[in-house]
Image 1 (spheres, helix red, strand yellow):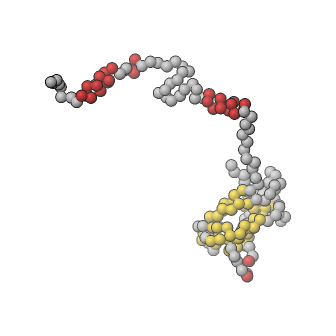
Image 2 (cartoon, helix red, strand yellow):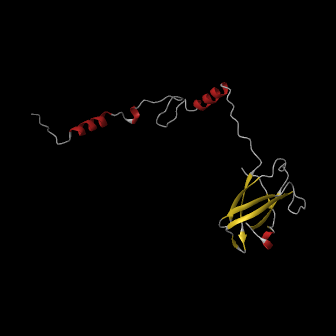
Image 3 (spheres, rainbow, N blue to C red):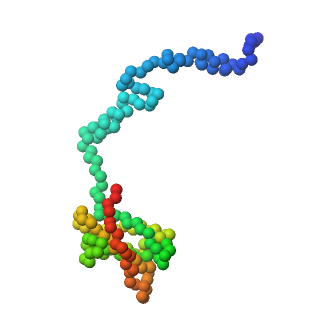
Length: 169
């Protein structure tokens, strides 16, 4: 029968031996400049892979194109009614002008019915068509009425001032 002189569990001796024989940081093999350095996670092939993929795709005749951009855009606003934030559904008209005080509209007037407004905030899509935004300034006039209005409420309340439209990415 074999006796053990120390009281350590059998696996502890192996762990101690592994710790004794592991190379010290100064004894680790050094890497040359430009070769793989796995401690930092960078390899010399890491930067070449995207370039190689692009060259390979171009050799296949694959052309990557962005989808054509339409003329529609999203307009977001805040609507208040009698001094408090509006909530409900509203019919809205949108008319473009060449200036803040211009009298002649540019293009047709759009009508968006039953636009949902929650805590004053609304978002709707507008599409004035091609040839409207040619680089000159445009001001948006908005008319609002409660959705499904009858009788004297059928007229749109024109909001002032007109909003200058600015491009954003």
